[in-house]
Length: 541
Figure 1 (cartoon, one colour):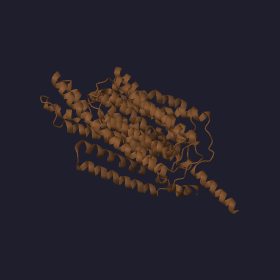
Figure 2: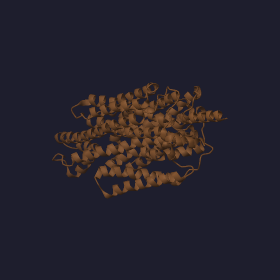
Figure 3: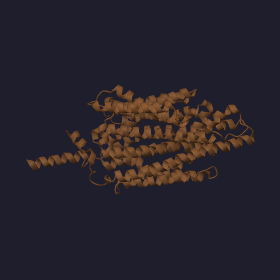
Figure 4: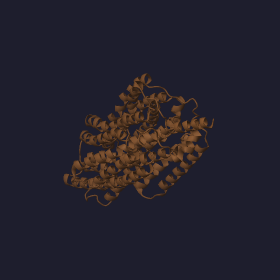
């Protein structure tokens, strides 16, 4: 009896850590993966095309620097704020059903954004797009985690999913560049409509439904707390970078931190929390999330700088700027496809660490970019930097959803997507605000004599405004103003990539040291997290 009991206990323990012989996915699952790629492709495409559209909508709607930043990043912030909420809602009503509802809302919001008549309307419609996007993101990855239980197949499926995300980044600038060359800036939002309509038609036929019959009710107080925790912190970061140390931004950030604490305390008391904090007891889960967050800050912020530099410093058309952004996106796609194959033999922590050191080298190369270096150095630097971050994106996501019990995969997927979207948006906010602050500081006393006084404030605000003013000035004065403003913008860009290089080096050391316990995916089982064994035991009981 004792031997029998011990054998049963050992079997339970091993199955809680990793399934010994998981079922392999079949044809239906792989076709379903192709359908799930559609919203993933769209959400990344919708973000990247706006980078190229920024100068056009700035000239048309004439937003302030703060409004332009909100237009750029409120989409990602609303996704980050509502992802966990929508993940819980998907557990209650069905993940496929929520996916299709989100697709319909996204289509309507895309049309509204395309025909915005002022900055305020565009900010509101972008926020609605973010909320709709939040219904799509957790559903896609949660469905993948349920459809692909075999570790090697799951790694490949996540790699395909990530490749589609990155393909949207690559395709967006090219397709968006063509649209901007021949149509108005609002046309970039209409790209999502046919993609969502295709999903609405094929989803009910090809996707299975997953619903948790024991899912708890949606806690509206937690939803509100999550929003008032995130948004005040972001507002404070933006305003501090824009205007320096002021009391209102500081109080805003403090309030956000207080609400974050209240949110966490409430989750601990709830039987069915909006965010299951116990998941962070899994070491691989927490470390992968932290690494992804910091890496995505560098990706989000510098992709925005990349697009603006090509158009406003190098003076390229939207079409050419989009083409020059393809090599770096292609490098990320290649790295994403290779990473799970390499991880079958080499521990993922070492692959992630090496990749991030390569990425840091690319960002350091970009610190040498100036107005005389041309496009070549810029492209090479971004190809190296973005190739290096790809292992973190793929293997980090796979570690997050693979390091928790299967029934927690939905929550893990929502948290992973929150981290991804929040990291991208935070990168735009933080690095964008740093670049704006550097630009404003450089331009504070550098505006050429002869520029009208009433135009000085707009020139100091951002490079797009300076270019618009220069078009109204005599040729000689216009060239002098453009050279000064572009130099100030380049210094801001150099500052951003310098910060990114430091982040990459620190994150590389972090990953190698703290993920060294994770074994290659080709081995029979995953080594248990020492810090999560008690949680696994609790899940079994």
